[in-house]
Image 1 (cartoon, rainbow, N blue to C red):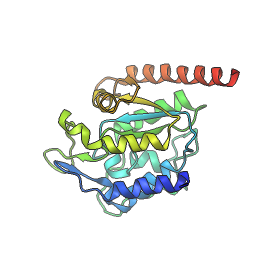
Image 2 (spheres, rainbow, N blue to C red):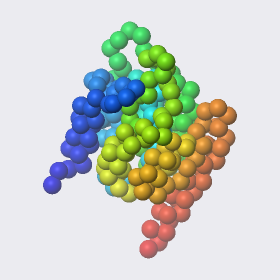
Image 3 (cartoon, rainbow, N blue to C red):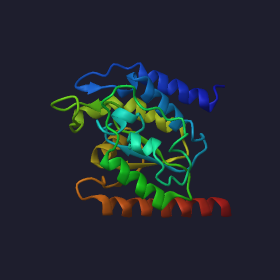
Length: 223
């Protein structure tokens, strides 16, 4: 039987081979993005019972550059007090080779700050997107919303990711992510996206989910 590390590697390699249809760009055609995603997913065990945050799609300043959903290059490579010891200098994350790169992204900074505050005692959260490809806007360095009819484009990869971590709890960040999980028949909770004034609601939602995880672990240990 294939071990978990091999399953993760095969998942990332297959994702990197995709040429998405429509107005999308696959960031995992880039070696550094493949490297970073593989490093990130390899930090979690198959048995992890933490959270899987599911967003909409890679942003041009975030995962479309870094390769890790909800993460900018600053999150991956700077020392920002990561309580899990997963990110920062010396953690083997790879920046892109081109000269013009986007290093910071507001949503990435907000998300990991909240996760570090609320989930420091839990397993490192897994992050993913409803569609793992960058929805290109009016120019390449731009984003657009994923249309409802485009959500199925990411279903295979969403399901495969969750199969890699079957004990983890999906948490939809925003409406598109919730629609994708619902369409796949996956039970989940939803929190507001932290951008556009949603930070406080996002913090509250993550805090509530953290309480549920703590309670579930306490019941499991009691049994």
